[in-house]
Structures are given as C-alpha cells and as structure tokens.
Image (cartoon, rainbow, N blue to C red; front, side, top):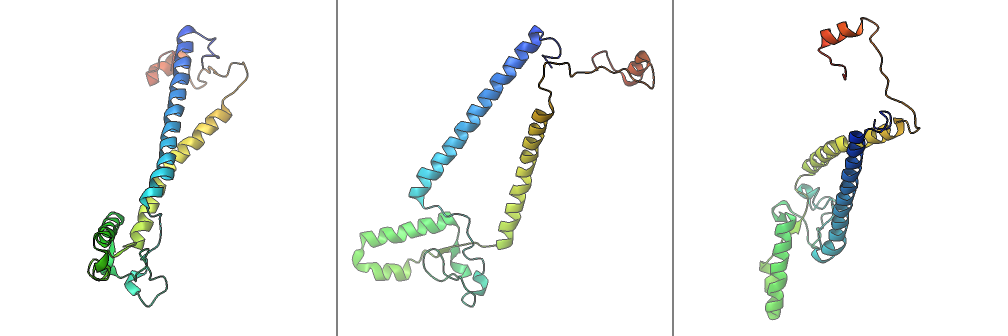
Amino acid sequence: IARSAGWPKNMCVLMIRCYMFLIVNYMAQGALLYFIAKEELVWNSFGGQMYLCDFGRDSGQCPDVPDCMGPGGTALSPPRIYSWDLWAMRTYVRDSLKVLFPDRADDINKFADPGEYGLESYYCRLLCCFLFTVTVMSDLMGSINMVKVFIDTPNKAECWVDYEEPTWADKEHAKAIHGWTELD
C-alpha cells in the first residue's frame, strides 16, 4: 500500500515496523522450535518417554488376542495399566529397591509389581487426536491464506489500489446511505 500511495513517510515507518515485527516473530518461532528440538533430542534420551503407541489397546480381551505384552515385558491386564508418570515412578521404585536389597530381588519382583504402561481407551485417543487436528487446521488454513496473499499481491512498481465510484448512485448519495467517509 505504501508503494501505491507514493511512499509517504508515515506509511514507510509503518512498513519498517511491520518488517521488524516479522523478523522478531521469525526469530521467536525459530528459537521455540530449536528449544523443542533440543528437548526432544536431549531429555527424552534420558527420560525414556514413550511415543504414541498402542500398548494395551486390546487389554480387555487379553490373553486371547495378540499383542498382550506391555513395554515392561509382562502381560497386560486392565487393573495393571497405569499412566506413563505413575508407571515410570513405580518402575523406578522397584529398580531402586533391587539396588538397595539385591539379595531380595525375587521378593521385590513378586510384591513390587509396577504394572504396565498402556492405552486405557483407544477411542478416547482417537477423539483427542481428532480434536488436536481440528485445532491445528485453522492455523494451517491461516498459513495457506497468507501464501495466497503473497502470491496474489502485485510485485511490480505499479498502482494496484483502485478507486471506483459506485455505478448505482452518485458518490455523495452512496456515502450518505452507508455512512461512509472519503477513505472508506
């Protein structure tokens, strides 16, 4: 718009400010992506965080269906399925007890059962994935629309802002009916 208006001073200042905000935005988003990637590469290697999996999807039918073995190496059953945090903590406690009392490892394995980590409701997961996809879709559509704006915006040094007087009435009458000013 600044180019089409003849590069007035206030429009040039606004244009420079917009580009500065755009650069700051790109830098902030790049930093966030960098920190997320760093967290994925560094912390998950040490934390052992599970990826999206289907452990326990058919645990209600175990042991009659395949894939009834959990990530801990024991058979899945609904009363022994825990969330990731609780399962990781219970496994840590069991392993710590084995280190403290190595001579009682059999008793610890028998009585300190950490259970298994698994999916409690497959349909709940599908619903959550669907809702996440729906929320991300608006952001995707915004990005697609921004690309369309970049493609459709003229890039030659020519006037692309048009002024057309209404054909259905004279200009003053149209301004009075709609409450428009000269700049509308």
